[in-house]
Image 1 (cartoon, rainbow, N blue to C red):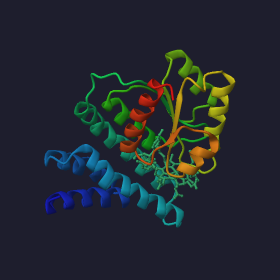
Image 2: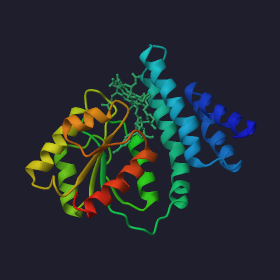
Image 3: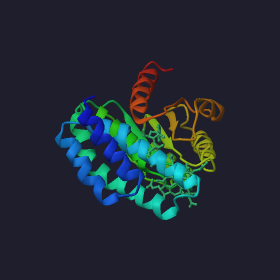
Image 4: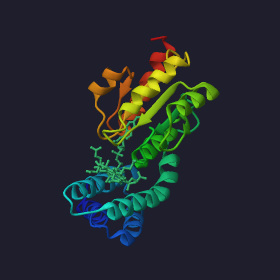
Length: 223
Ligand code: B1M
């Protein structure tokens, strides 16, 4: 990475982390004009800034207003980056159908939106149910579209357990063996995935694409 690239990414990170939100979209456009790839802007500037915002909130330096402002700014900027992420992908291939959502009680959808966009750009047919999705909605959509994968996101330790409820609901509906289940989100771990009987865990959006491709291969082989 050149010094200039590092400087722009640092600038974006600081603007967002310091809630100088008016300056973020222009700085992101500047980065794009300099040829910095959208995913690099997300991974090396925007996401680290959100971690700083989260820490400041935890420490009582920021309040809900700052959390909301940072979240809305991230979403606005994602609106600029999303078409570029989609364009860079190999769209024509139809790898499989993914039903994705943030679980019930959880309104955090930024990470889930990035995962959904990356999956779409990699060639998956993505059905995004949004945030605060009850277990029955995951099941209903999975049945309706004959999904290959059910993908869940949770950002709160208090809502992670909803992932288990979705898996139970898939079992009740008799389709657990027809779909693969992948979970993710900041508090989620590989161990938790094993514990609740999910098929896979991914720590970030890039990994999620890799894992979903693997799950489709496994499904084809009847594993
Ligand atoms: Co909230 N919040 N929040 N918040 N918020 C966190 C999560 C928190 C860690 C902040 C903190 O205290 N440090 C904390 C949770 C603590 C805990 O559970 N232990 C917290 C809290 C407490 C709350 C409220 C309870 C605050 C309150 O009201 N008192 C409240 C809850 C509301 C609710 O959901 N019911 C709340 C509200 C909000 C806002 C609505 C204001 C806003 C969300 C806006 C939105 O999403 N539309 C918000 C925000 C912005 C955050 C932080 C600051 C940033 C989250 C984010 O967008 N990160 C967050 C702090 C943090 O995470 N460090 C925090 C950027 C994003 C790119 O990362 O979502 O992790 P992430 O996604 C990554 C990976 O996790 C992974 O890939 C993504 C991209 O690489 N991934 C997957 C995500 N899903 C995946 C699925 C996969 C695979 C990978 O497979 C299916």
